[in-house]
Length: 325
Length: 289
Image (cartoon, each protein chain N blue to C red):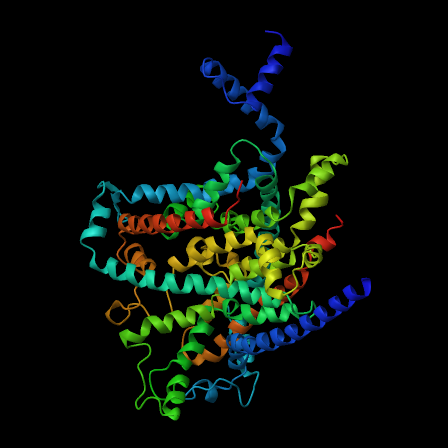
């Protein structure tokens, strides 16, 4: 075969689907083509190499390893013993605490996830309208709960929700005459989850919020003028026709981060273990097994089940907000 | 005709400004509420002992004192290793980590966003999947890998494993996705090499994303205490975060601990303000237009 013919073939392969008759031949050609493509993109691979070497070593391999461990019994001291699906069967059939943790986590995620997502977007959008010079201070104010250490947070909120009449909220309600005796905010099983959710929302303007703040700054100012020519004048129309389409990649990023962080909620302002396990989450249940009981295999099974849930919901986010081609 | 248009725009501008005032007022009121933990952090650090243990607890400080900082200095004078060594370690680790992370991510996100090489979607899929995968149970395998590679008990253990930051890679890649491909096509037509497209167009446009990555990672690495506890057994290689954590215990040291948590948070606030002021209209400043 002459060089010219070969080139033609290559061209054909890129332009049109493989001819059914010469399938094997074409597969081989495709492979050659792929190698060729890879060679032309050698700079791309070179740029990515440092990250991916580290990613595979310190992130991917440990994750696959722990997934493998979920099919074993392992207490760290002995070597792992293969038990097949035993961990999963126990998790779904016998572990009544898991059901409790699952319900709590779901309640938390269903409320905190969407609310914190929308709150981050709208506050970032408001902040985007603030003059340049003072904007960093506003961003700092809203990011402050995420910036200060968890301990400072905990103290602030325990003062607010203190169980006796000296707690700010209790004394306020008592003075207003709405209640006659202090409410046990952090002891009463009816109030624990709502209190946790309120505090979580207050400190939820973190990663996704900063992504939005920076994302809004990347929107091309000329697009607003172009939209104004088309009759888009109000703030909300601009948000809808310019800002939302332009920040789509950040919307997807933040959705993924919000889903992940709200389902992996662990230690909250309520101490663990909580009264009647009313604040038990899947992550706390997991750390009970991996940290306290050294049942690493079972902890891994919990992690896999939680990951599958997150991945399932994450897929929806990718479908809705991902690139449309 | 032209006159009418100008009038209309002027009116629109006025209306927008009124909206702006409402927005700033609203943000200020909410912002004060969100600033509370930071205010509390400052107040507590300057509280004298009688106010620290006041019951019911107070939020603001009445008689500010710097006694807590003096106590902290007294404690640091008696540390196992000179205090300056902890500080040096932390500064060295933080600076090298942030530098390497921003460099590696800036390199990796460009091809993932702008090149169509074989395996791109697969690699990005791996990154996002592992981002959503619960890593808590992978801590033990990771420990085994780190000890097998013999990077434990060195400075490297603070820096290298953390560089595989999938959240930040995803963030940078998404920021580059907002940049229209036309800009790169136009550059190519003008005869720019692939390297020039990368350094002259992509990197300036990543400015906001880089600033956000620095803010997101700084606090964690600056105050990191767990790496010192898990992987380091030479006191000379341990960090400020570790040392400050050891202060916490005991009622007598409550004041010093409050002072130390303020000192540990202050650099994060400073870095935050510096980096947040770097966040600006990338399109207007990148020199493309």
